Amino acid sequence: METYSLLRQFADSWVLLALFAFFIGVVIFAFRPGSTKAYRDVADIPFRHEDAPAPRKGDDDTAANTRDARPKEA
Image (tube, rainbow, N blue to C red; front, side, top):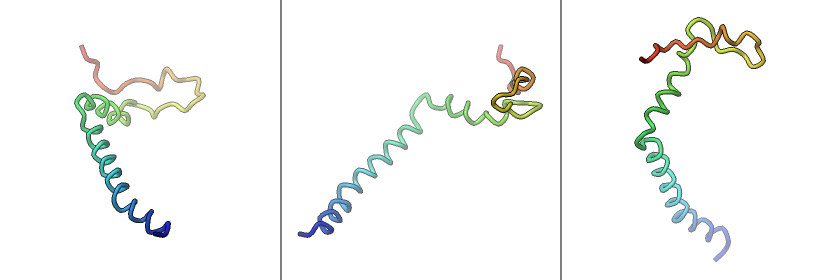
């Protein structure tokens, strides 16, 4: 059996199975319990600065630009 046929047969069977297992692992990781808080925090990033955009790296006036737009929790 030549090399191409051997590699093709291996890719058609075991690599397909490995990629399917990887896909299932990614789905389980994304929907795992406890990940909702992390995803909600990441989703709120665009709304954190009420008046101005996020400061650029190296700006000296960072205190004026870091107000959080979310209401404070009691």
